[in-house]
Image 1: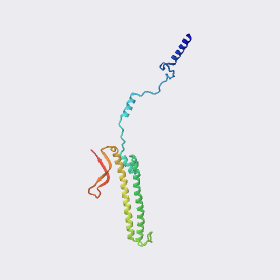
Image 2: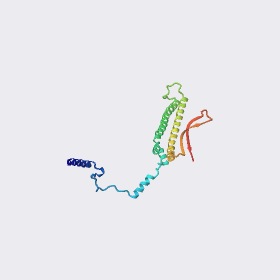
Image 3: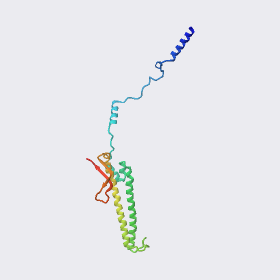
Image 4: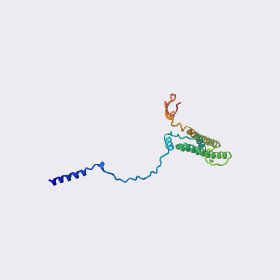
Amino acid sequence: MKKLTLIFLLLFSLNSFAQVNRNDTIRVENYPTDSISTKKPKAEMEVLTDIKEANAPVKAMKFNPTKAGLYSAVLPGLGQYYNKKYWKIPIVWGGIGTGIGITLYNQKQYTRYRNAFIAQLNGQPHEFSEIPGITAEALGRTQDRAQRQRDYAIAVTALVYVLNIVDAVVDAHLYEGRKDPDLALKPTVIFDEFSQQNSKAGLSLSYNF
């Protein structure tokens, strides 16, 4: 009987040790407690400055119209570059380059026919002498046409040059109002009751006071 009682007490003690509460355990992880933080707290002025900068309104980008116009006058397309309208630069260069090319071509044609006209009047041979039916009148009309086309090309090139300056100035001046809902430029359908076509595509400029 004593042996059974001894075995029963032994099993009971083993069961008690096996059911140890987790809250009774002690963690012995080694954390450093003597370290000093190298991060200095911000001063009150720095905190106030950060708050003001975070709450400050977004500054709108501004461009100087005088600078934009001057840049475009010195070098066409430079004003558009200043206004960050890069997609307009190839248009400006293309328009002015095409005008200059047409001007040079017609100037060359005018010089050819002018020299042939003078040679025809003086009875001298020229590059068109072997072509039958060539007269001084025909050469004169041809040189006048070449001269007229050259003058038109010069006028169109000058107009594109001036529009390049005007575009840069206006673009820089109206930059702040691009996102203004009271000022809008958008495509629209124009109804014309006096024309054969009742409706046409166009641009609508709206300004609300």
